[in-house]
Image (tube, rainbow, N blue to C red; front, top):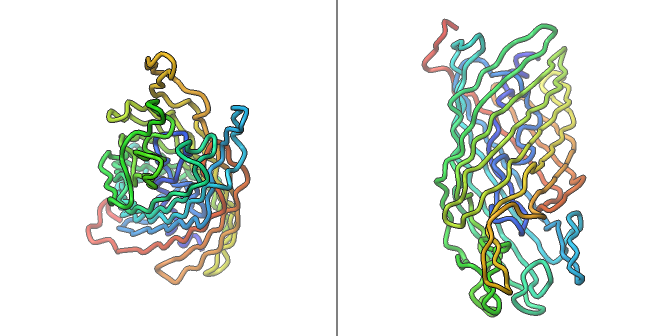
Length: 363
């Protein structure tokens, strides 16, 4: 039972999820809930592992609506936007068997891919003031920012506690299919709409296109802290990630820092694992970008309101160890969403040990 818990403890925070219409960056660096069900504080036994996590979101909506009076409501869902997405995150993880600074050393690399389809009814204040009672949409596929995790360190502590740290780096190397998209800034009556740039874009009211990149046009840096208590089949874990981004030089846009948490309470009995997972996603700083004054035409760059977001979800999980491979299903119910895209979603994780072809560390 303990070995099974160790075999699934490949808690590497990477991936993305769709962000709100107001913010230019479309993806969070950390895929919400991707580490639920894992033992966040432990490295797996020495060897190579393939961890593939598929997230399926059949019906997300945008939360954050401006009413007719111009008031902004961060927690209100806009029923006129619908996003269908699947995101696949394959991770190649290496547990070296070596020690560094007294901890077990590992490393990983990931190349997420995604498909996103979006439909928006236009002519609605706060969504896309390009027309009246018309609908437009987009469907794109692509490879997101490659994630490198050059260092992962795990320590065994007394009383069945475990702690793990890591540093992951998201490269600015994503690609997106052309799709039915137009990659240009939106202007209405000659006024630029920077809050909609790169998200809902169209060159005219009749164009009928919007654009969803498959990655962010910036680098990301994320230190991790994983804590686990593993005792007689129980796994109580928290995986905490803080992320900051470089500026998108193409749009002069700077995303605010973000804090992510994935949480697990599970019990393994024989080959089966049952439990509850939860995730929290919070932006702790405002985004920074330039806004053009429609009256004067002047541009001012700085911290902008209504760009922080919050997202919380939780749900059941069930896993089975086929020996040596393991499979886990997770369902997350949306609990609260503010200034973000959110809804219920599914996750399926497959862990496949690839052996230990180059054993190190004398193990």
